[in-house]
Length: 257
Image 1 (cartoon, rainbow, N blue to C red):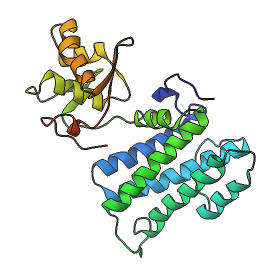
Image 2: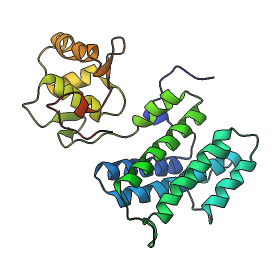
Image 3: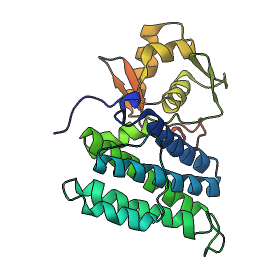
Image 4: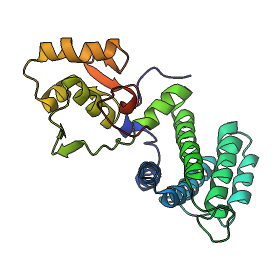
């Protein structure tokens, strides 16, 4: 049965050993960061590292004993095939995620990334493939372990990593938009996009240093919600970015997800 309660970043995969969970999130974040920075080879290498960590998680789940840290199987293909014998576990655990890992690992090993002699050099096309497969694997882990929908799982995984923008600077607990000429709406879009998951209205109000909370909600927040650029929860007083900032305002230049 799925749950309607929102999945918070700090709660995702919390049943895993802390060190194993930290390895998983770090490998995923590095894959995303390298891709955004157009560093194709490191992005693809991190995808291979993610495979090894996820395999360790699947094996621990099947055997009932998670190791504290991940380890590399001697043969990824055979190790993933062996998981198919765990017939009492969901097909996703036994077959679908393992087969995705095999494909992802193949890119790392035989496309000029982990070893010399591949047919091609590291490139945008392969890095994009690694990125999307990594997102799918992470979302599927969340879906299975938290018994939730694919939509909620994908949204939760998207909230794990802060989006990067050279225009946004973090100072202590505050975020600042460095370009003072941007409008209040553009500042809100940038801050909502940069933040993990939903962001509190009170926090954004403080960050942009607007003079009046009611006017800020009336003239900035609600019009953006009405035009579907953010999702505003009137009860929780939270805003969530709905799309890439580059697609929401011509005056805000930003890389897509």
